[in-house]
Length: 308
Image (tube, rainbow, N blue to C red; front, side, top):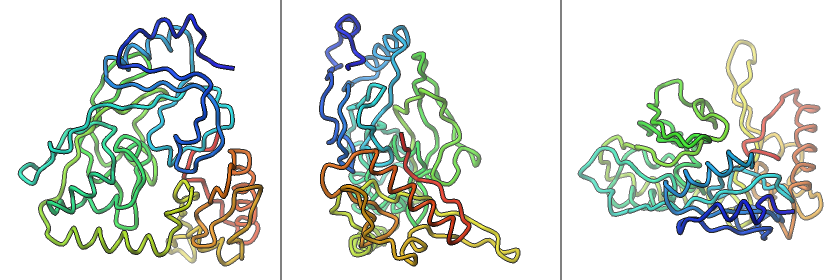
């Protein structure tokens, strides 16, 4: 049943707001999971403030969806999805400035392309990450080359009460694959990102890394990226990185399926939707993998994505 009654929808009278009730949500996640629910598209900051006021007054729960790479959509969400379509001008980025204030909806693949063009050093760290700038900041997305949190100067956030606040980023703002500054209901609407100078080798670094990812990861499949966080453990007084994918591979679980969801035969830290899988099948396969990892190695891994 839709969370947006006719009465509530009538309050969303703004040309920059588009409401969809009880629709197929599968295309709003990179894993393309089977899901039906309510969605609101928002094209301006003022419209977003209007929307949050109605949601606050009516006590309607919501979640912002970027590219949907780090969030497993439930079969029937008990919240409304907000899809931001805020203006982003890629032509505002050049090699003459050191930092740029960009919309949270800026696609990382576009930013990577610009980094290659101008040689913006540091921006290679998010090569191949399927996300918008806001979503990447929220989860401190990164690769083996580094994390996006290293490049963020400040973040502009809209709170659940409609208040706009600018948050200056410091050394305590991020942890591995997470931020430490967003409160429940906060929405990133803009961020200032900087680069570390001009380096003509950046284009080749990005090209090489993309080729490496294509060869080693199932980028053409319906996945959410890496499913589990790597973890650090102490062995004989030394810090050792435990890679979930490597452990799953050693256990021989590549290709293990539950319903239409399977652990990728190509990279064991990925799960692939081979049909019309749903969140229940994802959670079951995740539970099996976590149980086996702890049983065989005594290591408790965490998911990198948010499970319902």
